[in-house]
Length: 281
Image 1 (tube, rainbow, N blue to C red):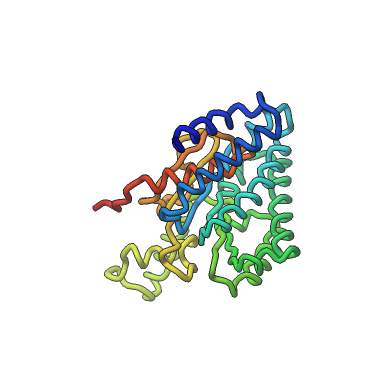
Image 2 (cartoon, rainbow, N blue to C red):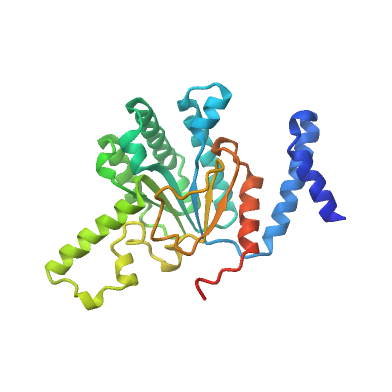
C-alpha cells in the first residue's frame, strides 16, 4: 500500500504544473519524506562528488542569457551543500570549472563565473558558515590562471578553515584530472632526481600524496568519492577526478543543475544504497 502511494506521489510530483500550488507542495513533501525514510536506515556516502552540469542549456531553454543560468546554478549549489551537510555527508567535491572551461570559455562568461566564486567565498566568511558546519575548504586545479583577487580570497578561506576537519569541501576550479596526474608526475620525478624517494618506494599510496586532491586530507577514507552525481543527462566524466573515482559509484541525473531538487539527491543516495560495492573483489 505504501509503495503504491509513493508511486502515485512520484507521478503527481512530475505533473505539479497541472495542479494547484498547495496540493503540488503537499504531494512533493509526501514523496520527499518517503524517500528520506527509505534512505535513513541505509549506509550514507561519506564523500559525494558533484558535476553540476546544465546551467547554460537551462538558461537557453528558458530564453535567458547564459549568465542567468550560472546565477541560478550558484544559488542551487548553496542549497545542495546545506542538504548534504544536514544528511551527514562528511566530504563534498564540486566541479566548479574545468581546466577546459577556464581556457576556452568567452572572457565575459569566465569573469562572471569568477565573480560568482568570489561571492561564494565572501558569503562563507561573512555568514560564518565555516564555523556553523566546521567545514574545511580546499581548492584544486590550475589556480595560477585564476584572477589574483579571487586567489587571494581563496587563500584566506583555506587558512581560516584549516582548523576544521569534521567536514571537507573541495572546490575543483580550472581543474582537470589529466592535468592533476601530469602535475603529480612532475613533482614525483623531481623528488626522484633529488633522491627524496626511490623507485622501489613508488606505489599507489605514495602517488596519492602527490595528487593535490588527496595530498592534504586528514582522513584517508575521505579521499576518494563514494558517489559521483552528474546532472543534465550527460553520461561522461569530463576529465573529473580520473584517479580518485576508479571505484566510485556513478549516478547520472536527467535534470539540469538549476532544477536539481532534494528528491533528486535522495534518489541518488537510494541508488547508491542498492548497489553492491565490491572494489574488484
